[in-house]
Amino acid sequence: MKKFYILLLILTTQFTFAQIRFQNIPENAIYPESKAVETITATIPYQGYEETQAYFGQGEYEIFLDNLDGVLDKPIIILDGFDPGDARDINGLYASLSFDGQNMADILRNEGFDIVILNAPVYNTGGKDIDGGADYIQRNAMVLIAMIQKLNADKVGNEELVVLGPSMGGLIARYGLAYMEANSLDAETRLYISFDSPHRGANIPISLQYLINYFAIQVGDATAQQVVDQLLNSPAAKEMLLDHLKGHLLAGSDFEQDPTKVLPLGAPGFRNEFQAELEALGFPSSVRNVTMINGSGNGTTTGSPGATVVDTNLTIDALTNIDVALKFTPPTNQTNTVTDLTVFFAGIPVNTYATTSQSPSTSAGLDSSPGGTGSISDALGDGGGNQVLIDFINALQQDLYSFIPTMSSLAIDNPDWYATPNLANSPFVNVFIQNTNEDHVTVTAASAQFALDEIRNGTIGISENQLNNQFVLSQNPVSSNIVIAIPKNSLNTQVTTSVFSITGQKLMQQTWNTPQGEISWNQNLSSGIYLLKIDNGISTQTIKVVVQ
Image 1 (cartoon, rainbow, N blue to C red):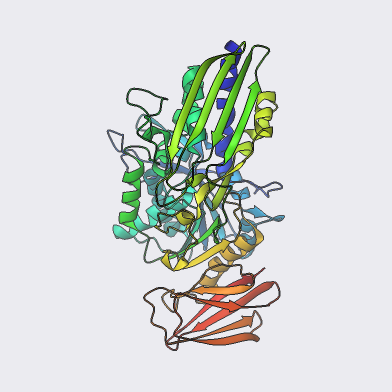
Image 2 (image 1 turned 180 degrees about the vertical axis):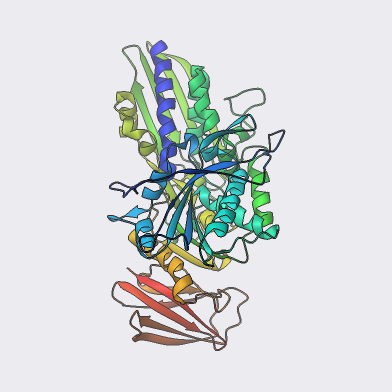
């Protein structure tokens, strides 16, 4: 039995490496030359839901000046995402912007922009140890506010800031900017870019949560329990996860499921409270809000509801083996066993553990919904040389799961996580979205172009909000059709759309009479970048279009 419990400890320890993958650093990433890391402390304290007093948050930052004049005059803040234990440092955050042998930060610095990386470290404040990368989103937002105020005081000239928030960083940015606006604090910020951020919650398969927690509890090892406490039970995870094991535990037990709690439930005292607070603040109205996401925009799923993740027998030694079966949460309004574990010693079952999940009547389970994906094998470090883990990974029937559902990253309030999103219902005025589900916070050439265009447009004079952001592209890059979303309350008797080359040559034009919902315009343009001009007879709007 001892070797079995050692296995459990190994599995739990390996799961800690999953957190690094919550914000992807691509292969052959381009790292900066680090010079001077500084510390910044919030001037506004925050008291968490389970805290007895308020604490001042801390961050660390580094300024990478532009490669033209080396003067801090066009700051762009890049925020940290969910990163327990500060496994991804400032250089790693910079490198995460790499794509196709390039780095978006390098491109911007070559064009005169200054990159400011704001990391959430592990620190002690007021006698309390805080893991910044997994701390309350609100307290990290207070650190961002201090960073914004410092940059606005130190910068040369009047250029307004840009804030790019990958993953949880997008929530920190949204909360911070909206808080400043609500409290009459001038952010001097023109653009907020959310990057696959969980505006309506994140997902880690509840079957995995149950399994990891069970391993930790049954081993009884202090280090294993610390893994659960610092990751799944961290303030940030409890604020973001739509379905959290804490919501399902039997009273008086730290691992058994309450059989009456099978529908998705967030962490008590955290999830609903945070979402209500976020919704009450809303989005900053004085800032241009755009998003780039990794989830599919056409309903493409990540596997299928109720799919078997793994169903295998793992041999521990000559006397010990374990049956492990995990499933995705089920189809709409159905129930299934998501975690099923049986331990055998000398062929005799000596321990069992099973949990059940039910999907609501409005949607199938989150695990297979369209969204930016997480990977189980990546989370396990591809086995880390441990043969039992390697056997487990080789037995996986479903490796990817939906980590940030498309509806969440678009901040669309729709109870059906599988519906094709209506971008007119999103609060973002411009959206980058594709037809496939990609690894969470993966930068591609197309998404980098979207972000670069948004950042540059504030300085080169191409306006994209002359119609109060009335029109948005449903997908950018576009494929066979240019689809333009029209808000429900829009009154357009006639709309003329035109496509120009970057050099100004008119390539296409069409007039639409009383369009409603959306305009779908067939195109056969060559791959490249074009300008889409929209004229409703009152004013015009120009949007850069990327054709794949």
